[in-house]
Length: 275
Image (tube, rainbow, N blue to C red; front, side):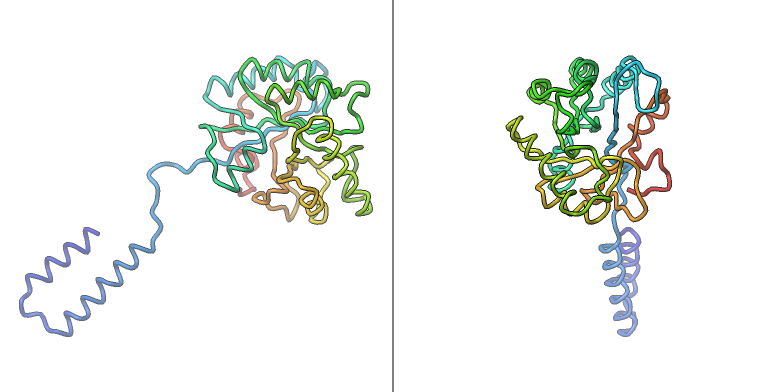
C-alpha cells in the first residue's frame, strides 16, 4: 500500500504527463489494488495446530502393548493439566469442527476403547482428579462380562461427565461382514447404549481400525455424527468426520513423544500426514 501511495504523489507532481501515460498509470494502480485485495493476509501468529486425540485401551499394571500403567497415565494427564490443556468429548470436538462452536484453550481429546473394567477403577479417578473428561467406546455385548464395565458403572461414568460411544456389539471386523450384519452391529450397539444410559450416542470407533467407505456410510446412516479410527489407511481423509485419526498411547510411551502429540496433533508424530 505504501508503494501505491508514493507512486500517486510522484504522479501528481508531473503536471505535463501525457494522457496516454495517465491512463496507463491508472490502470496499473487499479491492477495493483486488486492484487492486494485478492492476496491472502498472513497472520502474525502461528496457526493453531490440529486438536490431538489420544487413544488408550487398558489402564493397568500389566506389561503388554496396549496397557498403560496408572502411574504413567496420571503423569500424562497431569502434564496436560500443568500445561494448560483442557479435555473435551468427541461430541464437542466434532461440533466445533463442523459448526465452529467455541472450545476451551488448548483442547485435547482422551478416548478409551473396548470398555474394560479398569476404565472405571483406574482411568476415571485420575481424570476426575485433574478435572478431565474422556470418551469411552463400548462393546455392548461384553458389558457386564468378566473384566468389562457394567451398565451401572457406565451410568455412573456418564453422570460424572464422561462421554460414551459405540464400538459394535461383538467387536468384529466390519468391512469383512455382509452389509446387513455390519449394519446390525453398528445400529444395535447404538440402540442398546441409548436404552441403558438414556442419552443420545453420537460417536463411534471401528474395531481393529477396520473400515471402508461402505462401513463409514453405515455408521453415518445409523445416526452417529462422527467416527474415529487409529492410523490412517490409504485413501482415508483425516478431515472426514467418519475417519478421524487418533494417537495410540501404549506401554512405555515416552513423555517427550506424548508432549509432542499434545502440541502438534496426529500429524506431529506422523510427518507424512497432512491434517
